[in-house]
Amino acid sequence: MLLGAMASTPQEVRLLDGATGTELDRRGVDIGLPLWSARAIIEAPEILQDVHRSYLDAGARAITTNTFRTHQRSLAKGGIGHRAAELTHRAVSIARAACEEVGADALVLGSVAPLEDCYRPALAPNAATCRREHEQTISHLVDGGVDVVLIETMCSSHEALAAADAARAVAPEAWAISFCLRATGPRGVLLDGTPLADLVPHFADARFVGINCVPAPEIAGHITSLRAILPEHIPIAAYGNVGYADEEGGWISTDAIEPERYAQYAVDWVDAGAALVGGCCGTSPDTILAIADRLAACEREQPQ
Image (cartoon, rainbow, N blue to C red; front, top):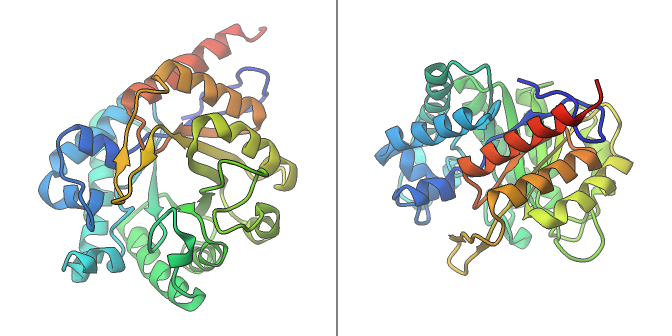
């Protein structure tokens, strides 16, 4: 499960998986809004399981459930809000089945996404609504049997705090949180303009704190900034994107960062202080395999 010390950083590293939604799209699954990747749970469960399996085969030892858009609010936009618990449970079961199929001793992380657009923090509902709706989703994930609740791609400070409070109530000691930060300007700033330094004191009981869906070349600087303010006992996760969001809420994948180059960025993240690394939108099993190979090479290069 842990890959051992590597590069110049004397710590253990866990390899996360890569993107689910954009990988489903690569494999021909309709991920159009409003259901986005949740459609695969209904229409293409075998392909979804194969995506999880591909990441495990590539070396991932933590996979994320395909629940980024299974909260009731998103599903209601597609007329199936009443199926939130069912589809969340099915997504967890599919991830578990992939682990069993491969025989991998891997964590299953339950994805909890922003209630609205990940890149438009002004759309986040008020704090009370965020707390109520995230608690419902987190309860579904815990009932489904995830190992850790992963609140991810948080771009609004009040939604992040509300989601963390919900996780703390439902899954104490089994939750983590990750943020979508500004790619330009000062490091460690959420898309809504809030410095992470203002939020870190609220996450002392998180299993880890992460940075995700930020361009891969920009992440190392954010990690350095976060490591300086985060208590030493809390690990940092990092999983960047490849490509960019389009105006319709979809994702444009590019080959601007090939897997081997992305893997070198991941090594840089570890050197900066990350203990969990993987991929976000636009990455693939090839990306994760390249990271695994690069981490193994770094470990071999360490003095005995």
